[in-house]
Length: 224
Image (cartoon, rainbow, N blue to C red):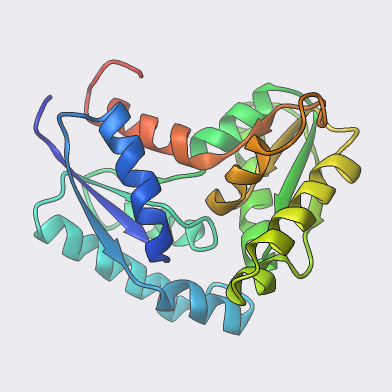
């Protein structure tokens, strides 16, 4: 159904251009607007876990987006992904996790799944999501977790070169014996494009593209 409205809920403003571009590609007839609240991720990092107050605030922001005219909400941050499950129980309209299609794809690709993150608060919920999708598909999986220590702190200091180097090293040196690699954060995807051909054997999966394409199904459109 054309001319529906999608709200994209971000925890960082740097993601808005990427998702605007993907929506223009996959949802050209859909109206979009962005909701950004950096405190959701900052409070989660500070606490070292997703707290109940953050879950409540995420649910309230989803409701505000629906009140503003959204027909669906896409939450683009994996660290607060578990809060989406709560929000889904409160609203009749679609509330989508950006990383669910990626996790489903990963478990279809093999038994040994690598999960790469720069934050433990993102690593743990992403691994849990992969396990959940594996149970739903009745597929046994082994999760190989890799935390890129120092990469997130480098980005906070504006040192993207160090971030990219640490992620690249983790991909090429610590993810050698897996069937698929899941990037827990959308910001890591650009590192893949800079890797030499053949540097990583396993397919590398990231969430933004497939996360936006799932909205087509929610809106009753043909798959992209």
